[in-house]
Amino acid sequence: MNRLPPLNALVAFRAVMETGSLVSAAQKLAITASAVSHRLKALEDHLGLELFERRSRAVFPTAAAYRYASEIAEAFDRISTATRTIEAVGNRDTLSIHCSSSFASNWLLRRLRSFTAHNSEITVTVSSSGSDQNIEGGLYDLVFTRQSNTPEEFQEISLGREKFRPLISPELLDNLGYPKKPNELLKLPIIRSEGATVSWETWLSEAGVPNPIVNEMMVFENAALSLDAAEKGFGIVLESNLLSAEAETAGRLVPIFPEYQRDGREHKLMWREKRGAEPKIRSFRDWFENQLRYDFVDEETYEPVAALVD
Image (cartoon, rainbow, N blue to C red; front, side, top):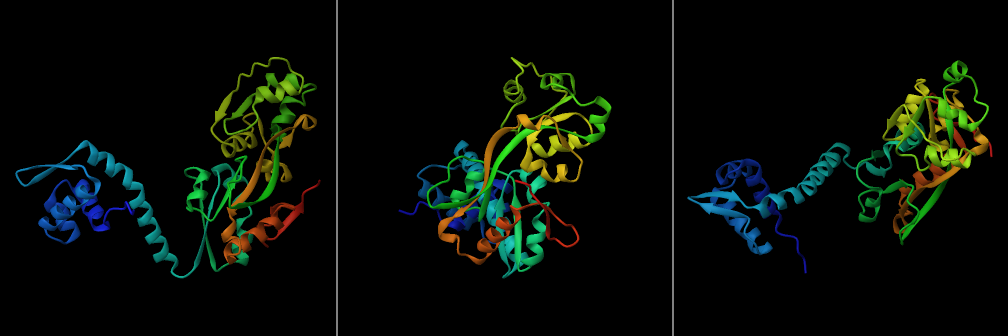
């Protein structure tokens, strides 16, 4: 049974909740107040509950009405966004990608121009809001994720397992001097990245420091901010080599005690198997597999350069 209520009833309901009256809602929708009232009644009949108290030709939302309005607001916003997008791009193909904000800043966006330069007929949208689980609901075409299990009916390409080791700017390292043992890192200004899947305590313990007590100088919620702070010389950070590769290649960050690097999670690109043959998804997959062999993309030619060393 289809449990979706009539769309015109939902539109009328939302208009009343936004404007506060039948008359104002009617003016907004260019219909009569009586028509708005009938649509509200149809919605209440469909839901089997009362959304408004009616007093002297006025309506007053119930607690259920406020709750329902809040729940359906996101759906209306998504319809509005989709409408603006299709109006803007017309018949252009749109490829929607979800990833974390740090992955977008430190890996994807540094390379994406090489894809758009060779696929100008595709409009790429990148989102970092919400959960990467949304791929199962069909909200995105592709998802970059670190979740361990790939859902049924999905395929993946692995970006590899990230490696964590301390990173510091060359200037700060020159000022402080290279530490001789891992426990000496506790005397340095430490940056904690809350998004890291390996903690300072875990890394130090496995590097031979018993029961380390870490007094971080700065704490950031994600890798992008943490790496940026480290590049600016605020301190030493423990972060993923996948996200720091471009900064390391450019010499803005250098690793300390790389022999103690610790495995983090596996990054991967996922898509629904039945959609794998779609031209836009196939094009991105081919591009992505080519990118795995390189550190970054030349900003003038958009071509990948500096092959990674195994």
